Amino acid sequence: MASALRVVPATPESLAPLPSWFPTPEALAQWGGSGLSFPLDARQIEAMLAETRTVPPLRLAFVGLVEGETAAHAQVVLDWTDGIARLARFAVAPTYRGQGLARPFLADVFARLDAVGDFPRLELNVYTFNTSAIALYESLGFVREGVRRSSVKVGSARWDAAIYAIIRER
Ligand SMILES: CC(C)(COP(=O)(O)OP(=O)(O)OC[C@H]1O[C@@H](n2cnc3c(N)ncnc32)[C@H](O)[C@@H]1OP(=O)(O)O)[C@@H](O)C(=O)NCCC(=O)NCCS
Image (cartoon, rainbow, N blue to C red; front, side):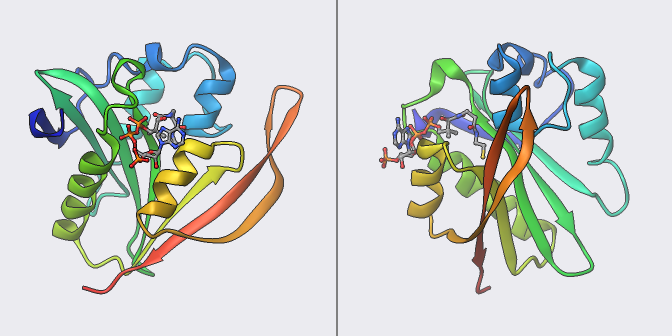
């Protein structure tokens, strides 16, 4: 599977399948936070991509293609002032999950981040119930720095968000 993976910048066309990956408001919020409205649509996708076209870019966005099909997606939000990159909106397509795609995809995304600039701090937020994502991030060396308790409202629920980061040597 991993050998067939090709990572390229995201386009409106390659992100067109994304709404189908998140069939409920909870699934959408788990991936993209509470700032998105359900269902995900082309207008919200375009707003994300617009931030990849600023100079310098505020955001990077990539897709992982397997035989031309969009199998993974991730964004990296860039803080150029302090050299902080935040992995965001990372997902593997439901039909490709559990096949070992996440690690090679993220490795390529982080290599592309390094090609764009110097970001010694790489961070991310993940909901504390998201045990599969947390297992992945911890295995990659991300360190839990704290939990923002009850920080996100999804429907009538409130979710705890854990903050993770790696301080990277270059
Ligand atoms: C998190 C997610 C990206 C993992 O993708 P995946 O394709 O299932 O992951 P992989 O098969 O490549 O496995 C990579 C690692 O993830 C972890 N993992 C994946 N599925 C897991 C599960 N069911 N239970 C525990 N850990 C799991 C493991 O650490 C695994 O490594 P290992 O196989 O060496 O143990 C995927 O579940 C997803 O897209 N979830 C919905 C969106 C989301 O929550 N994104 C994260 C937002 S912070």
